[in-house]
Image (cartoon, rainbow, N blue to C red):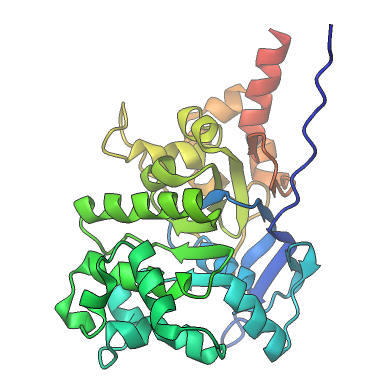
Length: 340
């Protein structure tokens, strides 16, 4: 009988540890805790979806990971090296980690040709190779073939999907190891969305490219991600392998997000209460004021209603390969199943 040796832990390519981003309040208002203690990690060649509704802090977290926002506390590390915020160090870092924005029209200068748009990064970083060949290769990898056909076109001459491919080519031309895509297909038609998602998967397979995909759409996460991290009011409330989280969601917030997808079975969950306000984070579970489990009486029946309102939950490590959840009700339910 032979014993199997456990696989060694994978060194994260990008990680955040205890990350906080707080913005001062206006006119005496309390400070806004946009990111409130987040641990997150991406492995080489992995796609992680960061999911949540508007105002949850996911875009601020992405900007902090890119070095566009300096954390109030905590640490961002790339290849186990803490991020250096000096201008030259950030310039070198952003060559390795590229941003793809939601609106390709807003990302592209209408006065620049496709060639100039893609070549811009090469020029900023003082590229000394064959610029024309590098631009052509990036456009080809982004699915614009033959690339020379697009060199002299302007953004208004392209379709929405083609513009997004130009933006992706502009990120690829520098040979990054990771891209952060903020709602990369939100402005596109459904048929084009599938093409762009397939492109991101192909780039992962061909180039070993990692990606953090920021989205409000759990359906998108299902189609593209290896792992998913669900964010609410500055914190990760559920995380794990995408199939495990999305087929058996444990947190009521994740369940509510899934219930409104077109293919969802049963009634959609309509969240009550006020939307997230990072300057007014409640005591206890930060979701309890809108929680359908608490409102229905299920939390009281499980004996955790008071905990939901008063006891803060620990911060999740969203770099773990296991599914994790920050929810008193889910923990009590899991404990009951183990003792049954």
